[in-house]
Length: 193
Image 1 (tube, rainbow, N blue to C red):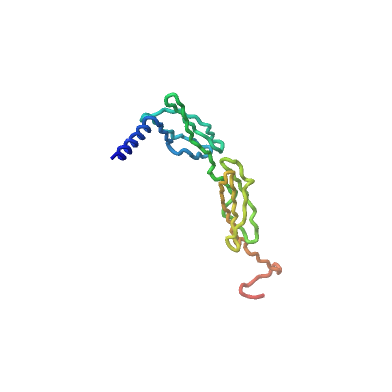
Image 2: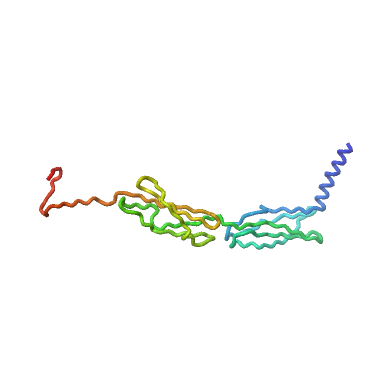
């Protein structure tokens, strides 16, 4: 019975101490969070209580979503004569893939006797801007006569975009028949001359 009473007094003492002397700080949302480049960040705030009552706070930040990197939201509050602060870490990231725009058609039909001449392309990214000079492309065989061109580009955050142009070979040139006879010659179908 003595051990039970001591244990019960310890538990009650712990909760009284926690309630009377410990300030509780909780982030609403995550303590570490990512923010997309050039987006608006709305902070979820924090819940701070002391002796069961809400504690008001102020905050400051160095957040700049136009630049990639780590930033802080600093929550400042006071209890009695003491001041405290807590930080939420924000990381501005770029997860948006760049884009490649193909000039001309994505499915190009050409005659067997012709080679495809590149129609051109452009590439851009929300963070890096113009990436046209960073585009790589290579031919990938689809069949013995057809192929596709794979265009790819990566931005500085390693986001990759891929697009394809299909090159389809067909017999598009009609046969040409030349007769080496005089102008008054004629041909009877099915007969040899």
